[in-house]
Amino acid sequence: MTGRPAAPLILATRSLGKLHELGPMLAAYGIETLTLDQAGVAERPVDEEGLEHFPTFEENALAKARYFFERAGRRPTVADDSGLEVLALGGRPGVHTKRWSGRTDLSGRALDAANNAKMLRELSGIADRRARYVCVAAYIDASGERVCRGESTGRILDAPRGTGGFGYDPLFLSDDLGVTFAEATREQKEQVSHRGRAFAHLAARLSENSK
Image (tube, rainbow, N blue to C red; front, side):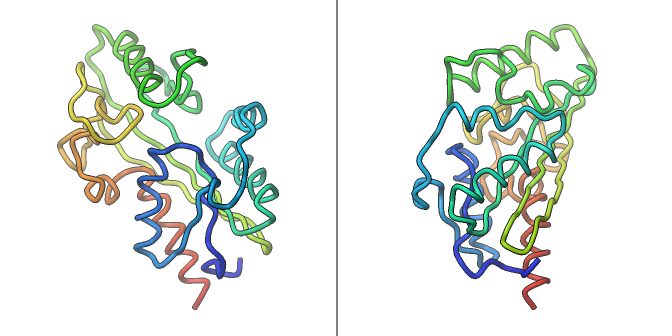
């Protein structure tokens, strides 16, 4: 691995929520980034939706990073796969977090609402609400690949709180913060979130290798 990318790092995600978090996060480490749109990588919904078919976060993150690395002209690329694991549900939704509701016709906030509604139905009457968010960041450049993992523990509430964040954030009460991720500021969430920890680890490793 050659260290911090000399060229802008391609953020291989179409998620506006992730881009809102990752751009400032990596900028704080002195890493310049480009979105897929800025890099001129046109969206191919059928191909891109089919990338996340593996049973682990690591495999899914690498599949996305490899795909977009090639499509972006083999420029330094980072992708992640993340999800929510609920103890009482045997670790579900896990790698199926994004489409857990089965609503393939929805996206963005509407999809988040459907997923959250299913979560509340599944946990109805269950006292043990312990859960963790998991994120795996996969980085690829011409010299190789690197994978970093981050986790954040908490519990699922019986009603949403807060208007920030995305995904299951309004239901996830963070053990570290004492508020939901949707109630936290972006800066507070970044310090303790699964994604913040995974990308902080990755950024640190890239900085170490560039010295």
